[in-house]
Length: 507
Image (cartoon, rainbow, N blue to C red):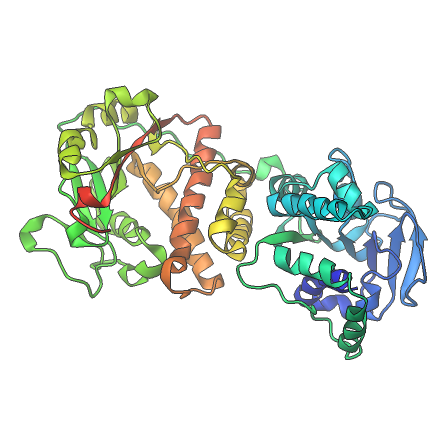
């Protein structure tokens, strides 16, 4: 079946060493064929039942994933494909513990997870029912037990303490196309022709931009487990004296066009991506991000982050620093505490009326003196953060960020999972904070962004070219969550959004 082969294609491509006959391999939930069908080598297969002819390379054994009948470390590789979703929510962590117990090198888990799979399976079952056909048993179990969310899946793996990496296994279009294709008997003949060439490739490729149906997680059991003692302590709380006359607080507004950068009292303008662009007049007071230690040439994929980097590397003698954008500013009006997240300013007269509330030094000074960090209120996405990003952008990039944070900044792993499973985040990269906190943030921020820039294929063109800027907002949210969870006060304020007319024309 095409659907069967799609389950294993990404796994086989990612882990070619599974073909090594010297490696002891166990597949839990193998069915009668499983991975042995594509490896053409001995594989121990465990399942509750074996209906039909068993593949000659599979060594079948009846049993349960909740009580594997093997000694600790009995296998190099333990594979579990499309199984966890057939267990109840409370059984899944124990099942993963059992997989880890009997593995000595790695555990590879794949299966459906997240909102796209949840919606897709429900819609597929409804489609079958409308045609007055019985819903397959495997699909009934999916609906009965509930497809795990991506956050739940990550939480189950994270609690084990081993390093891991996550990738897309099947795309949504890819998965359901395979299911539908298998309903046509003549397709089996075409699949036989495909498999006769001993190719491990998927007969239906996953399109770039396809949202995930299932995920593939590889857990490195050979590496030491992390414990809570290994988690770094939170950053030291920094307080800034409430001295409005000191002049050691500076808020920057980042823009990319000189004709879209309004002059706001108390805010210093900086042109991002200034490399090769029209430069501001010397007496304008507008900074450029292409001198000294600069990355202005990377503005196409980093967007406002090139200006933030420039301030971090080239500005000194500040006690505190803040950032807003040419069309987004903090709303520090006293009455804004109960308002919505965003107030739209529709013309120059609106900007003139409220511009002194964009950078109210008295409010900022009190917050910083109290040890707080100022951010905007969280977004209101109406969908979980992971799926929101994958709907608008590429799933592979988001998962690359997940892998990067887990590997390079594991103390943020809990906040990463919270971000994945929440339906709002601290967006827009807007903040005011002590310089010491800004320095800590930038070390983490640019470590991740530069690492992701090496891994992700950049240069998509158009809107999607700003991939690192999109990810920077999610990285920022994870860091702020960590500070908040560590006891740091996070002061949330709404924002002003300047529409095109308020900027003087089209954006």
